[in-house]
Image (tube, rainbow, N blue to C red; front, side, top):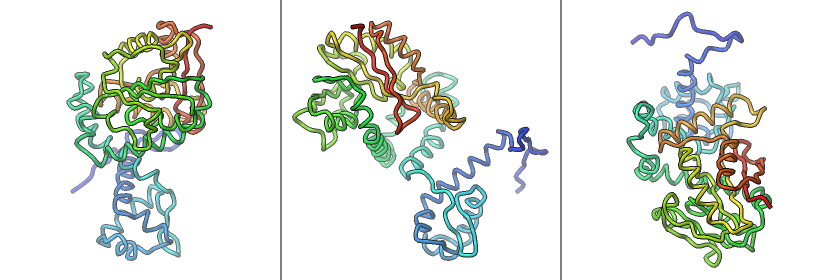
Length: 331
């Protein structure tokens, strides 16, 4: 069988292959995932191994392992010297690597239909519910991200006694906030299948779960602070604007809304990888439920429409693509 390549191979002015050869990058990524799943990188943590030794360690066929190693060498994941094969570039956290591989190669499987129609055949959470292992990976990723950001978030949020965490899921951010702010009491509002499973370490005396649909149900009143953490990217602009209007009405006279999300316009200096990740994330949101990453400038404008014109943006060192946007009424 012949594998056709476009000839002559297209080149950028720098001499780097043009984007048409991204298929090779996809092959390198897929080979890396195979290495993760087979335990190649774990096996090499103890030191250099020959191909035969690696094959024995991961219980693989030597010829197949040799072929995989050649690809991983080509793409810079492994290196080969007189001592044997060693790791040259460690993949990211296993949960993240496997989760994103499943998203890109499984969840995106019918993305053309979603782009044409604007309606996904299966929502992201339906897809996730059919894959318990993927759901568990995402849970660990979200809990870890909340812990990483918790100190910066707790320091930036305004004083508050009563907090409404809209779409707070299992309460990751609220648990971390309660640990750092002993003065707060939090109500987490989310769909029944999510909010009824608050984390086991959620302080029962200061965290309450409320099942409901935050797009339509009453949000209550008198809240000092409303959190919208990683919620808005799941909704289109008209839904965000209506949610801002309703959330603003639920605040106390001096209350604030705090948003944590990705900004569609990444900070300068992060390079093309940042824009590439945001594009991948944005298309995943569209595929999942017709959402997308919003510009913080737009979020601030929509908050202003809801009467919250005093806004400030707080960068987060632990996650350069995310920011806090805190908005309140003029004093």
